[in-house]
Image (cartoon, rainbow, N blue to C red):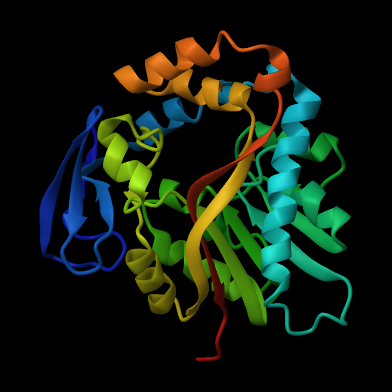
Amino acid sequence: MGIDTDCCPVCDGQRSTMYGRRKLWHLTQCSECSSVYRTVFPSEDELTEIYGSDYYDSWNIEADTDAFWQMKVRNCISYIATLDRYITDAGIEPRTLLDVGCAHGFMLDAATRQGYIPSGLEISPAGDAARQRGFNVVPARLEDGPFPSESFDVVTMIDVIEHLADPRSALKSVRAMLKPGGLVFVVTPDISSVSARILRSAWPHYLPEHLIYYSSSSLSKLFSMSNMPVLEIGSGYKYLTVNYILGHLRYSPGGIIPNMISVLAGMLPSRITQNPLRYMTEMIAIGRKEDL
């Protein structure tokens, strides 16, 4: 049995409207901050089932493990390059970075290559794969307070915040772990994007584990409420292979458009399906920890 959301999980707003049904779920939109969220959140048992041992099967890693790894690391290196524009102590090395929800360790690999000392948080079995690669990965949640205060120069949350039922508490924990002037970097689907408006229920980010959808205004509101005002927010991009996209489409619930794309793309040769191409996707936001 799910959990009804009586108020906005982003700003605690009491005024809302029905956003409509997307795939299997009814969505609500906050009239105060414009965030869109599941009208009924999944129960803990339902989330445990969603995040089972086969959760990462949709990534289609087995199609070409090396190409997949390089694709993911390439994206993370581009994120770090964006972050580095806001590093105020560029002459001080090395900097520390925490990747929340680090999965197999792609950001940890990228951060190491770029001169950071990285750590990760991951509660799923994917964390074991990252540890086998030699990365420092703690099997804990943000709210567990797994690191001392002011431990990190940067905290990254790549495709994470949309999974969190209490994003304000999460960012409060992030803020506590950041050094003064430290940066938080978030990547998340943009509910106000052109693709979301055109594809509607076929938008691939409508997934059972995605609880809250943000626009630039609602994400900015969340950062502001966390005393980490936004330095940059806008459209981002990723390098993705066709194989990776196909994997997500196969695991996406229903939709004529995803099924048609999957069938057509499945006919392409491997030299095309394994070659990463740049796609405009999701939204990036950077905030800085300010003194209270």
